[in-house]
Length: 204
Image 1 (cartoon, rainbow, N blue to C red):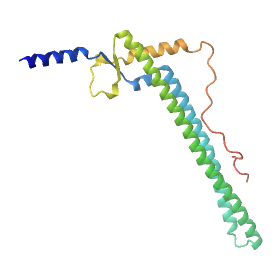
Image 2 (cartoon, rainbow, N blue to C red):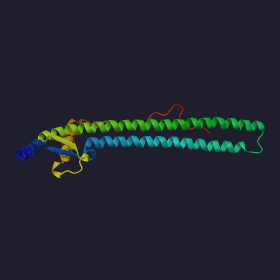
Image 3 (tube, rainbow, N blue to C red):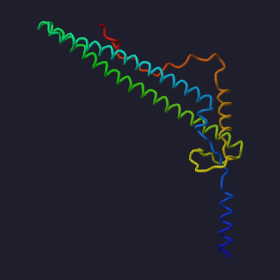
């Protein structure tokens, strides 16, 4: 009998020691937190700028490819003399070397642009998560909560434990209070590596 009562007391002490818990949904924060929205918009502009720059390089490559086809066609002219054939062959070799160089430059550009954007994305996520931690701590202290967890890690949670909206409110209030009151600065330059020297369509 004593062991039974001892078990009841132990269970009661465990429940008494259980902390008040709050849950936060980071995905919802990324959608509603003004700072996160702005950073994601800037990142989208960088992606668009990179795609546009890659598209320009694609056009230049297509132009070079068309020129190569034209040179090859001229080289197959049966009326062409031996000297003419040599001249056309040399022209084709030179143009093809330019094409291969531009092809390599395009791939390097893509790799650099993707790397820069991924770095920006990682920095943004790190920054927003740090903000969420700070805001969660403030909300927890105000509500008497001892533990705040990521909602995505819970298999089930009662809606009463969700403090996401409180955290978002705290984030936006803090961001608005710390944002500059002067006119907005010019948008950040797109994350697009500078083209390689001589990275222009070859002259016809």
